Length: 372
Image (cartoon, rainbow, N blue to C red; front, side, top):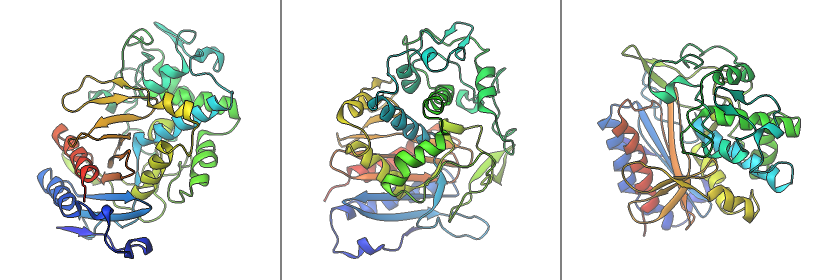
């Protein structure tokens, strides 16, 4: 059974465009949970400064309670968009060049079999065209290769990301820089190292100072290195290990780092992506660079990857911009359209079937395409 979130102060106005498609979206959310036997899910829709929230299933299976209306969740790879935004702010400030080699900023760091920091640019890192191998085993979908981390083994371990990167770079390059596209969390670990080198501050501090504080995103944060719990109201995050569904909410996500460690709410993510696409965080030149995307060869509607930003063509013909993220216990998908409607869908277990992941995006599609 789906439950609609209670009204906020701004929701008490007469029904308007934001309410379009509410019943359809709630039905899709409920079907998602029942069809893939997920614990629960939540959608947050934002338009013209107003939010509405609905949930289906349970945020806590033991107590049978839904997601809190202002639920904090682990937002996974949405973190990459925050990191890319900071990097592009530094580009606008003249502190880094997108097409400069990484070697200029991290001398001697990016080297390995077929890997040369003199030939890999900052743009390559942000757009996943570097050819640098993946450090996180779950991205490959198979057992860990030498040099890759198993997140379950790292659940309680504070990770030294510099050491993780050094180990990842002992594996051979996947391809020549710029030759193709392949998602690699190592790219964003390195991007964060560049930012920290340039600013003298941690990537979490730069995100807070440059994005979270100016936008008033009080429910979003980059966890401290030894932090394991989620601050504030949140659902339980579940993961199936050896066939058993377990509570995986508490974990040390320093292994995910700049590639996926952040926590936030659906409303905050909607506000962030809306502000980003409205030009509140970047000058026009850098926002244009961020949106310059490479088409991805995937089935279905057109998808392109920019600089930490994903373009998706929706079923109604609109285009949307966002990212998305998976991390043990949580999956988030969302987007914002040019007419200002933004949506975030969160589930508290990563769907086991690829069809389930696609159907999370279908809830986003339904909400973004809804019209009066």
